[in-house]
Length: 215
Image (cartoon, rainbow, N blue to C red; front, side, top):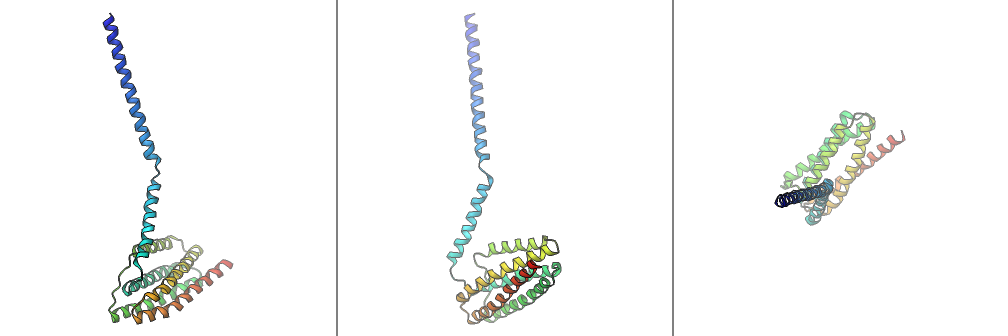
C-alpha cells in the first residue's frame, strides 16, 4: 500500500513538473512573440529609409563637382520631366493660363534639349548619370503618377503649377551650381543663357498660382 502511495505521489510530481515546464516554455514563447511583434515594422523601415536618405546625401557630398557628362545628363533629366508633366497638362488643364503655360513648357524644353543634344554631339560629351540620379528619377516618377491620378479640373491645375514652381526652383538652383562645374566653354555658355529662361518660367508659374488663388 505504501509502495502504491509512493508510486502515485511520484507520478503526480512528474505530471506537475511537466505542466510547469510547459507553462514556462509557453510564457517564453509569448514573450518572444511580444518582443518581435512589439518592434514596429515601421521602425525597421524608417531606419532603412533614413539610411537611404543619408546615403544619397553622402553620395552627393562625396561626388563633388559634376563632370560635363553628369551635367548633360542632369539637364536632360530636367527637360524630360518638364516635357512629360506638361504634356499631361496639355490634355488635363482647364485654366487657360495653365494650359498656355504647359504648351510653352513643352516647346521651350524641347528646344533646350535639342541644344543640349547638338552640343553633346559637337563636343563629344556622352551623358552620364550622377550617383544621385536614381533618387531623382524616383521623385520624378512619383510626381508624374500624382499628375496622372489627379482629376481634370481646378485640382489638377493647382497641382501642376505647384509642381512647376518646385521643379523650376530646383532646376534653377542646379544650373547656378553647375555653371561653375562645367568645363566645356560652350556648355557653360548654354547654362548661362538658360538660367534667365528658367527664372522667367519660375516667375510665370508663381504669377499664375497667385491669379488662381485670388480668383
